Structures are given as C-alpha cells and as structure tokens.
Length: 577
Image 1 (cartoon, rainbow, N blue to C red):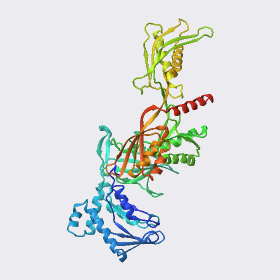
Image 2: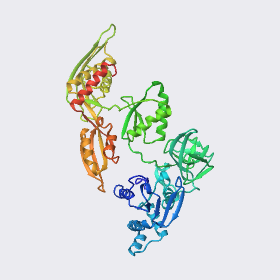
Image 3: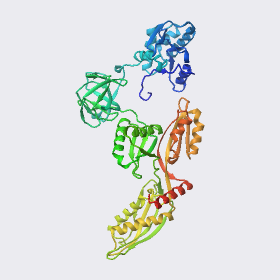
Image 4: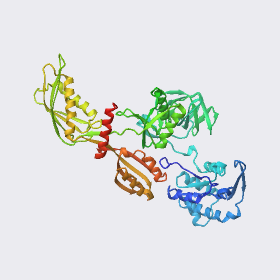
C-alpha cells in the first residue's frame, strides 16, 4: 500500500473471540506499521458479550441482532460506556489535530468539531495518507460490517479522485496521466484470471473510457484485437450480465485470452498501464510429472498458472534440464503442486533444484599429450603441447591462447584445438559440472601428413586438459548468494545464529529508519538456503522477509568437495552421469 500510495481504513475483526483486545491492535498499527491510526468506534462488549459498536463520530450506538446480524438497532450511547466513549473521542480528535489544521485550530480553542467537520477531516487525511480510521466488529456474524462499508464510501476516494498514470508506448514509455473520463478512449487492465466452467474469466479494471458487450479491444502486450462476447459484474460468486461498463468500474469478461497484468485499449491509443511490482522469487523447486506420458498436461497446467500469477516463474535449467518452479515461498509453490494434482489429476515429483556448481584450477600445469589411433587405413594422430593456468578474471568461462610458432600444428587445426577446450570445460572431471576460469595455452605440437584431422586435434586437446586438471589442483566452486533479511529488531540474534549455522558470512547489521526493524546482509552458500523461508517465518512469528541474488562462485569446503566427488563417482558407476 505504501508503494502505491493507497488510502486505507482498518477493521479489527473477531471481537467475539476469547482474548479480543482492540486497543492492542491499534497500538500495533501505530508502533509496528507506523500508521497514524485511531478508532472511530468503540465496541459494545467483548468476547461472548459483543453486541455492537458505538460510532464516535455521530455519537450513536448500533446493536446487531438477528441470526446473521442483519437487524441493526440504532440508539444512544449506553450509560456504562459514556466515559470510555468520551475518552476515545478526545483521542480521535487529538490524533486528527496532529495532521489537520482545521481540527487543530478547534482543538486549541477547546471546541468540539461538528459531525460534518469531523467526517470531512477524516476523509481529507485518509485520502492524503495521513490518517487511518479504525473500525471493529465480527465479520462472521455481520456485526460492524455495515458500518465498515459506510466508512468505505464516506472516507475513501472514489475512482474520479484517484490520479492514475499510464505509459505512452509512442514516447518510450513516458508517464501519461489517465483521467477517469468516460468520453476518452478505452484504457483497461486485466488484474486477475480465474478458470470457470465457462472458460477463462478475466477481471478487468476500466481506468478510462467505456466498453460495450460485443465491442473490440486490443491487447497491448500482444497486439491482438479481440471481441468481447460477454460482460458480467461479480457479486461474490454470483454473476450479473451487463451491456456496458465505464471508467471506474471493475468487470469480468469471458472469451478473452490474456495474461494477468495485460493492458487493453480500443485500438485508437498506444497506451499501457504500469504493471504491479513483482518481487523476485525467493524459493525454487525442481518439478516433473510422475509419468512421462503426462508431459502435455504438465505443460498446460504450468502455462495457465504463469498466466494467472505473475509472481510464479518457470524456467528450464540449461545444465540439469530440470523444470524449475520459483515463487514467493514454499507454501506458495506447494499450493501449485497441489492444484496440479487436484485440477489436472497430475502427480508430480518434487525435489530441491540442482545447485549449479562449477570447477576451476588453482595453479599452472604443463601437458604434452599424444593422441594416436590406428585401425587400418587412415588413423588418428595429433600431439599438443602447452599448459593450463587460472585466468586473471576467475569468472571467465575459459580462455584459449595459440602460442604455436611455425606449422608444427597446421593453422587449419587450431580451431579444432579450441573446440576440444570447449568440450573439456563443458563437463568437469571432479563432479561433472562445467569449468570456469581456465586458461589453455598451446605452445607446440605435432601432426601427421595422413592421419592428422580436425577430430584428432579436438580429441587430443580435450584429453590433454582432462588429464592435466588434477595436476593443477582442481577445486569445486559453489554459488554464493547476496542475502538481505528484514525483520523486527527483537529477532536479530535468532536470525544471525541461523545464518551462522548455514555457513553465512555476516556483512552488516543495521537498523531501519524508524528503529523498529533490523536489516541484515550476509553472503550465504546457495546449497544451505533450501528451507530458509520456513525457518525465517517460524523464528520471527511470520514477520521476517528476505531477498537474495547471485553474487559469485567461491570454493567449497574440503569435506563438501569430497562428498560431491563421491556422489559423482557413484553416479558414474551407476550410469546416471
């Protein structure tokens, strides 16, 4: 809400439950969320005795009766609550006076604002994000819900009062004001997709212009022109067919193929609405169908889910060839795995994604390798001489240098030597992972007039590198992630201890501007980050969050390298690598 400057009202629910304490919730709004919040209602009874609320603005009580709270009895303030109501109203006026000049003037003159002045001040400061009015009740029993809906109408802005900005695609996506005007060309945004028995149901917000049933709209992401066969207005799970909608309306459509966050116009303007902020995924799973015959269903399910949810990312790892599902947490990904089972009858095998290790060398080593093969007729003959050493830039995949003087290796075979290097670094010799930071220098060689060939020199160079890597002290590298954790300051010690257990190196630990949260930055091996989302959530009462991105590859510990080499050898023996 802060990112998009959305005005808000708060509703404290479940006042009929044991332990209900609205004052504690309001303190949390002020201290934890840094919101200038104050109650505009006082509950009439709590827990089992909860009957209704007192409106502090109009000085009236509302008792909710009936099986579903549908009967509202309006009356005066109960005598036993008079003092509390007076105290809470004074607090409401004082809170408003801190942000509103008109109320502050009345407050200093010790005058009580009228109902109209109070409502105007609450609305004015709620829209300006300076104040949050707090309502309360029990939603399950419909107690206080009616007053909350009245508050939405009275205190929150209507569509014409909200400034919206689009992107002018003709002017390098320059910001463009989008007024809520039905006379201007259509501009709309599809913000939610849902699968129904009639097909894909697309929820769309109309920001500008109007739309009629049977009209044509253009998807600005794909450029496709589409006909709108049906428009419906949603009331919970009920649909009401409508013939037209205008700026400010939210409508649902059938028969429109699009993705979430696609913009639409009537085709006369080249404008798109800015998409919502989509955070980077923090957790990934390797997923594949249990049965190979279900791959079509698997692809269809993933295609639909990514259209619905922009926070769900899917890609195929180029090294392991695994399908990687990435999202906002383990629960987020588990929901989609369960949906594949429930909606597509598709059993999936889920596991941790393979960590992209790398291999490299630590010192220079020379080689002189002869590849000779004779099998009747033309054979294979190639000798390569040279050395391997670490690159100056360790992130370089490989570097090939031709230092051959003369024609001991004919020039036409030099590219074959480089192909052999590419083949060698593509699969390492310790764990089977690609190599990086390897410099191969060819200084001499020998060729045969008949038996030398492109293949011979390619194989010779490949095997020369392969046999020389152990002499150059080959090591395994692992991806190190740049991690940032944001959580309440009281959990700092727990978070640091958890990161230390995961072999993390703490870079900094700072406090947020309001002093309530701690921001911890650390470098952590990716192999130790699986399951961290759940650990962080449980250790911070769900209040902690983190983001991470790749930083570099660093050498693994000796015991970890020995374990990786052992696993690779076992896989080779089993024919799995």
